[in-house]
Image 1 (cartoon, rainbow, N blue to C red):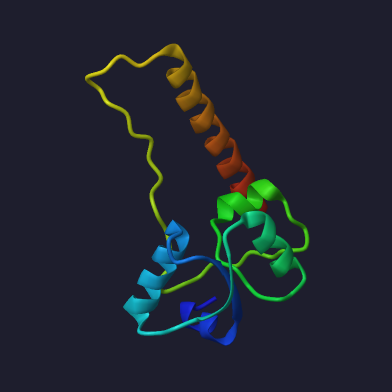
Image 2: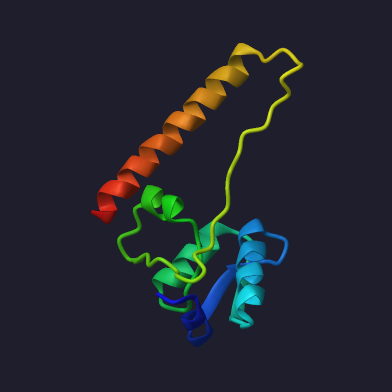
Length: 124
C-alpha cells in the first residue's frame, strides 16, 4: 500500500514519545503529509482490540503481528517509504559478561530468528 494512503485512514497510534510513532512521523515529514491520529494509546493491549473492532488502523512491526497471530488483523506493507528500524543488542566489550547475559542474548537471537522464519513462511 502506498504510504500516502495512510492519510485516508483513521489511525490508532502510540503517543509521540514511542519510537514507532517517531519513525512514522519522520516518514510523514519525508513525504510532506499528515495522518489522522484520532486515537492515541500507550499499550498494545488497547491498540490491538481497537484495530480488530475496525475503529482504526495501526502501524506495527510485521514480526510482532506474525508472532501474535491475530486472525482478525491483516498486515499490508507500506511502500515509498517502507518504515523500518534496526534493533540492536548493546553491551560493553571491556566488561565481563555473565553467563545469564550470554544466555539471554542467545535466546533473544533464537526467538527473533524463529519469528522471522514464521513471517517468511506466511508471506509465501
